[in-house]
Image 1: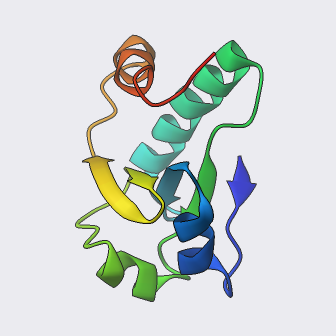
Image 2: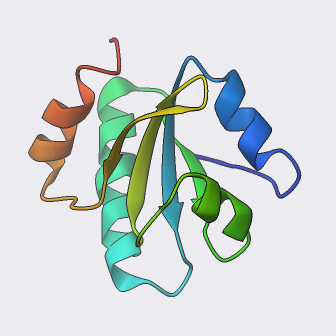
Length: 104
C-alpha cells in the first residue's frame, strides 16, 4: 500500500482511473484487521492495489467524500465515488467485491 501524502490527497484520487483508497486511523483495531485482509489481497494479485489515507491527517478528504467511519475502502473513478465499503467481512468477501474493479 502506498500512503497518500498531505498535499496531494484529493488530487491523487482524481487522477486515478479506478482508485482503491483504504481510509484508517492508527489506533483503530478494526482498521488493523482490515489492512491485513487488503494486504492478503495484494499478495494474491502480486501488486500494490491500494492507496492508504490516515483519516486523522485528512479531515478535508473525509468531508469531501462523506466518509462516515473507519475503516473504509473508498472506490473511485477519476475522483467520483463508485462505492464505499465499511464492512470488511472476510478476505474471500473482499476479493469477490473487488474483482469487478481490479483486472488480473
